[in-house]
Structures are given as structure tokens and as C-alpha cells.
Length: 296
Length: 305
Image 1 (cartoon, chains in turn brown, red):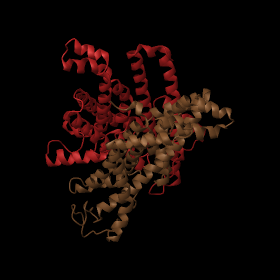
Image 2: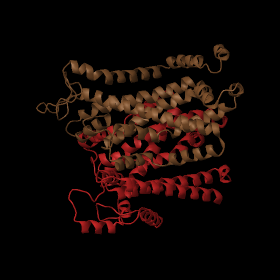
Image 3: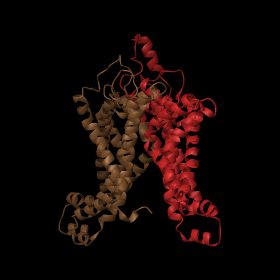
Image 4: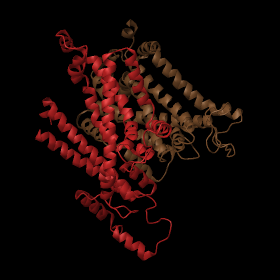
């Protein structure tokens, strides 16, 4: 750990290297990271590979109809004869993209809000945090549904913007707490004494030092956001046909569960694995980035 | 205590006003009102309907009417059915409430048993099995779990009815499905809390004076160990009762969630915003009760504003 002591205050690489070493020792976290990476590759490259094999996600084959998993269709086909493996990959591409974009939106708002609140302090801090408290207590999904209904659109852009727009509250609290604890540290005072302006001070000294918890929380919010999108799509309020996300595929499966149970199993399994991997990767990252709070 | 209650109450009223104003804006901003539906209405009929719903009044007047109505507990009137929003809530919310409370009860009992049991035998196979169940609960989304449970317990085994809301046996599957994710979270919280507690001195004292292991865990350690679970219960209850849309859809529960979602497709905006205001009101009141309960349980909080 002597390297960390000698490193300059803005240099977080040695800390990051330590964290990476601890993460790699955590077999569960490594397995989850690999699993998530595999699912992402599967969803991105899958449709291409299927295309070479002559299977198209949109291609219908009504005469074939719904068939259980077979050598040619590993997850079976739906009543329109579409290959469910390829549809699951396609749905995953949309689900993961929306989840990552929504998390980025939440990250952007949350970090800005929390950093401003914590840094400025006083009345503004109080007002901003009261707002967060109030929003935190309200059933936010209900607002998303009302806004989607009123605007009458189901655009994917609006969907991830709204989901991101309601998921930044915890991030804001977290960043504010970090900023408050960092604000009066010597290295920040030193930088200020050297004449570093506030925006640069925040961007170069404060936020990088709060990066650990931010990364952990962002990782944990990806599955939560993903569930929210699937939840809305399941109800028919999210991603719309011809596009498919895991939520819409699972909704189709749920309708056909009695007759064709495999329609649900494929996308349901892949989505569950993704959520599982991200949750435990987040736990592993927390242990790696903050060795003091390791679980007993 | 009274000051605490007064400040919270004042804050709650402000939030309700903000939510209601948002509802009003949403109501007015909505495109394609319910009147320009399938068929063209004669001008006089249209004017009559607009007058009946006070759509011919100036906007500020409508806002004042809306807020005054709200203050009198009038949430508005459906534009698709001959019912007021109040009637719809009165008829449909009890089912949602019951479903949420049953799910909460299941999550609490099952989650605590799993979590505390796992902590009592740390690193045994029972611990790993309990945590595996918790992980499944957290990872498998309710809308995947629900249909699968129907497939197994209703269709294949025929033990329980697959849907509808008639009799206790038909409520088991939806309640379990809804409660499962909270079961997982509660189990993990309880396990972590208990593992921390059993290392404390007073637990060692309890063991040293010769109490049975069961008494040590379930009577002494449990009280402190489940504190993380208690703080989690407030938000969990709110989400269990207001977030059961998907479960109600899967199991065809005639609850408020079903009504809320169908009012989106029906473009029945008064119901949509009315139910939204009601949900917020309910959650705010619930939080108020939880705050007061904490103040009552923990005397240190009482004096604080």
C-alpha cells in the first residue's frame, strides 16, 4: 500500500489497481463479470451469426408455428414461427442499450445534483435535498406511466430519458455525502489555495475521489433500471412492436404459458441471469473498492 | 412530538398540492381528449358534454375547481364510465391493498426465517441453500416467476387456481409472486444484520449464562439484528401496495393497478391522474405513520423537528 501513499492526490490509478486486484480475487465477482460480458457479446453478435445461418429475427414462418426447442431452434419458435433465440438476442440488445443509456442519464443528473448540493451547502443544499427526499417517497413509476400516457408516445428516447430521470435520487444523496466528506480535506484546500477554480476542482479532485461508490451504485442501478423498462414493456407501455425487448418477449410468453411454456423460458432465463450477474458484480465491486465494509 | 407531526403534516400537504398540480397539467396537456374518439359528435352534444365536464371554463377556473374538489376529497370523474374516480378507487383499491399486505406478510415471515436461519448456521449447506433462494428471488423478475408458478402449481399440479381473485387459495400465487423479490432482500438484510449482531458482547453474555442457542438467536440477537429490515419496511410496503400492476395483470386481480393501466389505453385521463394523486396521497400518509411510529419507538427522535 506504500504506492498509494506516495501517489499524488489526483492520481487514482494505484487505488484502482488495488481494487482491480481485489476484484479479481473474488471468484463470484469475476464469474459475474464474465457472465455479463458473455451476455452482451451474445446479444450483439448473435443476430449477425444467425443472419449468416439464414435465420432472421423478423422472418415469420406461420406454417412452422410454435415449436419446442430443437437442434435448429435452440429456444424454440413462437406461434409466428420466429426463432426465439434470435429474438431473445435482439430483445437483449434493446434492453441492455436502454438500461445503459438510462443509467447514464441518472448518473449525469445525480452526480451534478449531488455535487452542487454538497459543494454549495447552506439553503440551496437543504432545498435540493428536501426535493430528493420528497421524490424519493413518491411512487415514481406511476409518474412515468402518466407522462408516457399523456405525451401519447412510446419513443425509446423518451423511455430511457424518463427512467433515467427518476433513478438519480440515490446517486445524488451518495455524491453529496462524498462531497461533504471531501470538501474540507487538505488536498482540496491545497488545490483551492493554488487558485484552482470550482468547476475544475470538482471535476478533477472531488468527483474522481468519489468514483468508487459512484461506480458501485451505477452498476447496481443497471439491473434495477432494466427491470423498470421490462416492467413497462410488459404492460405494453414501453418498447413497441416491431421492436422487441425482453419485457415484450416475456409478455408474449406469459400469455402463451399454458400452451407454449418455452416462449417465456428463453428470454426469462437470459434476463434473470443478466440481473443476477449485475447485482453480484455490484456487490463484488463494493467489496473491492471499499475494503473496510467487506462482509463478514 | 406534536411539532414533529405538524411539520411533517405541513410538508405532506405541500407535496400533495404539487402532485395535484402536476396531475392537472398532465390532464390539460393530454392530446386527443376522450371527446374526439371514434365518431364525430354534433356540435350541441359536444358543447353539452364540455359544459358537464366544465371544459368550457377558463383554465385558471378549471384549476381552482380541480383543487377545491380535491380538498373536498373529490378526485374527479371518469370520462369512459359512469363512475367517479372515488368510486373506482373504493371498489378496486381494497384488492390491491390486500394483495400488497399478503405479499408483505409472506416476504417478512419467509425472508426472516431464511435470513436468520442462514446466519445461525453460517457457511453450512443450509446457509448456502437459503441464500440461493434469496438470490433467485432477487434475480428472477416477478413477471417471469408469476407465469412459471401458474404453469407449475395451477396447470401441472392443479393445486391452486391460476387466476381471478376468488377465495384465499386464489390469492396465494399472486401474493407469493409479488413478495418474492422482497423476500430475497429481507433475507439478505436479516442475514447481514444478524451476523454483525451475534459477534457483540451481549450475545456472548447470553451464551455464557447458558441460554439455549435458539433463545440466543431468536430472542436476544434478533431484536438488534433485524433493525436493517425494519428501516426497509417503509419503502417496501409502499411499493408492494402501489406497484402491483404487473401481478394484477398476470393473475387477473380486479385491483386498482389493473384499472390504472387500462385507463392509459382508454385515454381516461381523469382516472389516470386521479389514481396517481391517490397513490401519492396514500404513500405520503404511510410515510407519515412510519415517521410517527419511529418517533414513538425510539425516544431519541421525538424531540427533533
